[in-house]
Every structure is written in structure tokens, then in C-alpha cells.
Length: 134
Image (cartoon, rainbow, N blue to C red):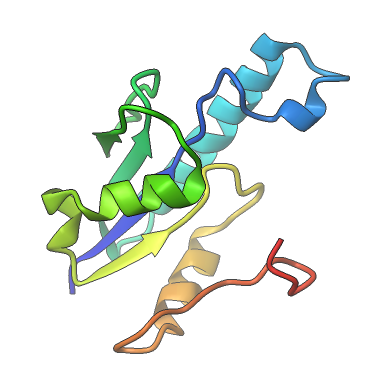
């Protein structure tokens, strides 16, 4: 089975805006980029995932082992996913795992368990910690 990972990436210049009171714009950008690098590193360690696609605007820099799907405009998470799913490189995957680029402390095992527990034909959505969807 060909499994691809899709990671929508917010414009790093505007990332982590809730931390603006304690971190400068450059520090927030660096934090978001480091978090993205950590997530990509964990995804790439998973032997079930064949390709990793980052989707974002023209400011998005490639990470080693990833492919870039470049949007003209960064209009948000859901729009990035919709845009990326139309890309023929990802459309021919048997399964797609969509992961945010800023999941602190995610592990290869968590991703593997998520994939293993997914229904054969269908969708599996991971809820937030409070199971509220926010």
C-alpha cells in the first residue's frame, strides 16, 4: 500500500501569533520551523509512509526527504489540504495521512498506531486532547 503524508504549513512569518507577547516574529518563525522539522523527521522514520508532501506558499523551504506542493496563497489549513489533494503526485496514493506541522512530541509509534487503526475503506480522524475538535 502506498501511503503519503501531507503536512499543511502556515506561512512561517505569521506562525505562532499567540506567542507574540513573549516571542519576537523571528523567534516565532524559528520555533515554527523547528517544530516542522521535528514532525517531518518523525514522519520520515515511519517505514509505512512512502512520500511526505509539504503544502504551503512560496516562502516554504523544502525539508530533506520531502516534496513541496506550492500554493499561490496561504488561505488556511483546510484550503491547503483541498489544494494539495488535487496534485497528481499525491492523488495516486492508496492512503493519505494528514498531519499538522506543529505537533509537539509526536512519535513514530503514534503515527504507526494511527495508520494501523484506520479502517480499510474510510476516514480516521484524530480528535484533540479534549475530544472537542478545536
